[in-house]
Amino acid sequence: MKKSTTKGTPDSIDKYVGSRVRGRRVGLGMNQTRLGQSIGVTFQQVQKYENGTNRVSAGNLFKIAKAMGVDVAYFYEGIPESVVKGSVRKGGGLSDQPVVEFETDPTRSREAIKLMHNYYRIDEPEVRKRLFQFVKALATSRKAR
Image 1 (cartoon, rainbow, N blue to C red):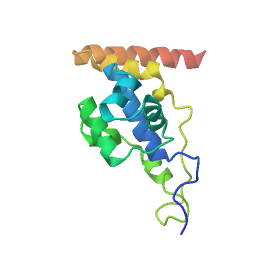
Image 2: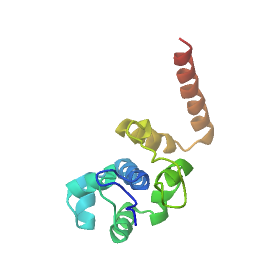
Image 3: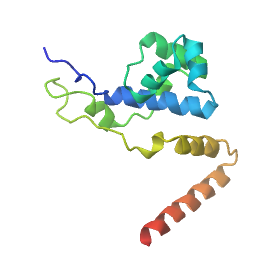
């Protein structure tokens, strides 16, 4: 029987869940030490969870969800199909897709997380829509140069 992951290679689902933990933590203004204390692990362990280096156990994911005021399902919401397919290795019988890596995913940056958090704090939907259009226009104009 083959192992489902190669030693030293984080699973794409573990990385996705970790990025959701990080995003929620940063959005709440919580540091890794405080989160670790609330669930009974060190801040280094929280770092490993967020990077996908270590898997979060079901028990600790439940504790993290409670500490952050969300359901456990929150950490899996919006998971791209490519991540799901990429987490199953060849020989697993479910997919022949390679593992998808997100080392350069810009949405994992602190800046992007804070930007999204503040964007959704804007109460007026029309203002959010116009801000979105403005940013899109700026990005498009930069590509044209």
